[in-house]
Structure formats: structure tokens, C-alpha cells
Length: 190
Image (cartoon, rainbow, N blue to C red; front, side, top):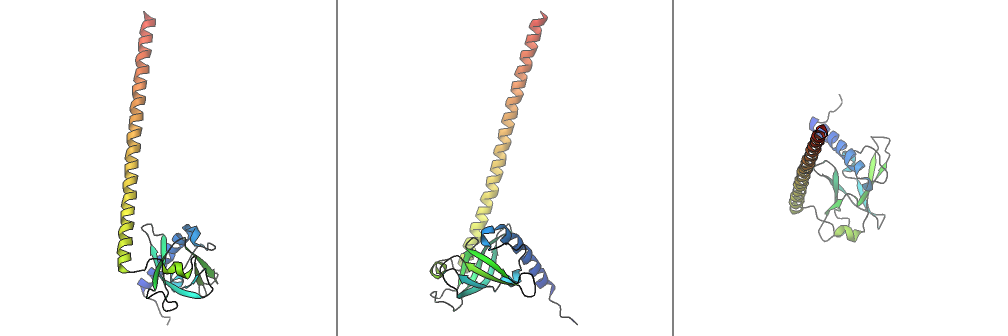
């Protein structure tokens, strides 16, 4: 009998796959060549390389999504591959990496290679993936989302107010034209 994966694992894979397909495809600068669909399961643990060399510098540890379910960053684990002064988990924002697909025609053999468009020194300067970073980034993203919603609501209110004033002016102009037309008609009738 075939071994079945737990339902929550299957749902997780399907959800992350759908999110990655949308997030990586929309963030066009984050791709070498768009593939249309990406496997989150295969992207996790993908080998990571810096542009300054051909040696592997780590692997993908996590995929960070925003409120729109778009990929915002990858977390790379450099492990003990390089001496980054005890740091090993770095946040690399979308637009600073590309994803290359290898064996993309076979789900069983698909592999990804992530190329970070930075030197090893620049990678070491990226934010560390810590609880403090997570809390600050999450709060910042929530505030940005709230500001965007507030700005959109304010713009809508301004648009409504402007449209209302314009309609009032048009109504007044029509009343004036109507009044003048009546006055002209009254004068002609005399």
C-alpha cells in the first residue's frame, strides 16, 4: 500500500506552491526566466550562491510573504560555510536574488538554484533573521498596510467630495441657465 502524506502537509505544499507561483511571477526582477509555477517544497533548501563566486554560500531556509501573499524575501542559512561572525540566517529581499530552474519539466527531478545579486560581504550586511527583526518587520508591514488603506480611503473621500462639489456647481449652472431661459421667454412674450 502506498504511503500517504498527512493532509496538512499536502495542503501546505499546495498553498505555498500557489503563493510562490503568484509571488515569484509578479516580482519579475526576482527571476532569471519565469517558469509560471514554482514548488515551495523544492525552493526550501535550494542551494544559494553569491554573484562574487561559484561556491555555494548557503541554502534557502524560509520564504517570507506579505499581506498580498507575494514573496517579499528569502531567508538564507549560511550555516558554517563562511565566517559571518556567528551570523548565519540572512534576509534577502525580492529583487536582490534570481531563481534558476533546473530539470523544470519533471516534478520528481526539479531543482532550484538561488543567485543572490550581492557579494559575500554585502550579504553579511543584510538583516539577520531573528525574532526582533521579525517583530519589527511585521509591525512595519502592518503599519504600511494600514497607511495604504487609510490613504486609499482618504483619496476615495476626496474624490467623492470633489465629485459632489462638481455636481453642485453643474446643478447651479443649470438652474441659472433655466432661470435665464425663463426670463428671456417672459421678455419675448411681452
